[in-house]
Amino acid sequence: MTSHRARKKNYSASVLDMSNVRAEGFFLKDESYCTFDLPPYFSFKAILKKTDKLLKKVPLSNFQKSDPKEADRINHVILTNKDGKYSWRPMQLIHPALYVSLVKKITEVNSWKKLNKRFAFFSKNSRIRCLSIPAETKGKDAAGQVSNWWQEVEQKSIELSLEYEYIAHADITNCYGSIYTHSIAWAIHGQKWAKRHRQPGHLGNDIDRHLQAMNFGQTNGIPQGSALMNFVAEIVLGYSDLILSLKLKGHGVCDYRILRFRDDYRIFVNQPKDGEEILKCLSETMHALGMKLHPSKTGLSREVIRQSIKPDKLSWICRKHSEKDIQNNCSLSMRFRKSILTRAAY
Image (tube, rainbow, N blue to C red; front, top):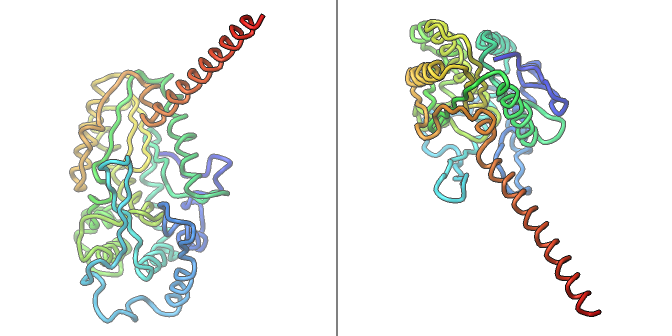
């Protein structure tokens, strides 16, 4: 990973480049609270603003009559469909009180400094780059993420195809639903230290408790559908980048580049054995964190350029060319027919 500085003109700032106050404002935006598509008449500005005002005066615990993690369905779950068939994905509108409380915890001055230091530590290996830290854009944040995918992932992949002979793909199965909430404390404080200090008052434990409160006390899975949860996921995934880096160093693998966009990995190597070794080490890393790679989305290929572009985009490009050819053929056919009719008239 490299620095998370905003590198493209459509980005005003990565969240890690913001002050703690600005980061708090970013996470409390309507668009950050809900990142999936809803009809335009849905707005959460008022409730987020009111909740923020209340929690500025007193902590959430003052309003609790019972432990939130004892309440089932505290969040609102909406199933969304990715492919129009059977790929259903649960998106969640987090209870506003829990959401705002967690934002405030993460963006406290000392907490924000600690998180920035950890992300800087995760990114020491320049051969592994994370390209999915939430960022505020000049336009719509969602549109900015799509633009960032094209500019940073696909364009960079094509550049790396000139340097590397092989590309490996890997994807985590049900990433958000598999994240072990205790691993957040491991990522922030170190695994050994976190296991010896489980009491409240430490940032990782406080984040963990918020997440359990959102999920009926469960320690597996975090809600999907907000910029805040994308950031929390990056804490664990950044930690996994660090573990993977250390493993590869121990195995003597050094000729590689990895681009990661959330749970999607693109691994560039010049030797197939290096690609296989990296995939093995990545699988071991995920297993240690309670996750696993998707077998049907993991593999090694020599078609670096072709594999650098998502299949749905390739399909779209082919379809556009096909439609253009059909239009050209129809146009030629009409001109030919018109020519025949004109001659017949004479």
